[in-house]
Image (cartoon, rainbow, N blue to C red; front, top):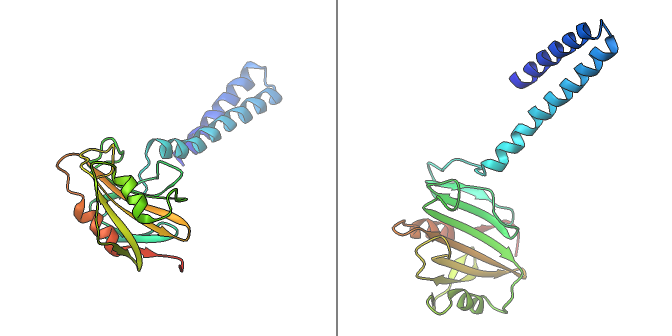
Length: 202
């Protein structure tokens, strides 16, 4: 509102000056007023877009666990974690611990969804684990769907430390968590897996 009122007053002032300078020409005053109002409106409209591009945070850190829907699924966002805008086309959910950007946060949790390259969840998990990770022999359940858990020795954000691979409706779901050295993400990750629910029937 302040921007709109300020733009109106500035436009009137410029139009009045133009009117006086142009020997009381109403046409010149009208043109100047219209141009200034147009610029003021564009400035006011551009501000929300700029704020969205520089600040990706959608919700503040949860004081208490809160169930949140992400389209085809939902889960409980752990207390202290912040939901932010996904940073990729395949990312459906992205949470950060003690930060608003992945490179400054202590922990990150993501859910990526896409077409599977390998035929099974276990084969995908083995590929995900690489040569230094491990695949858990016992599956985990995500609302009745079997998932395969993977752990790697990663201690930074360059690679997930823990993940669960799930196949459903010809899609692969990668639920991943990473952290800088010393940050505890295991409880938050387990909470997401435990509270996971599918929004559409299988």
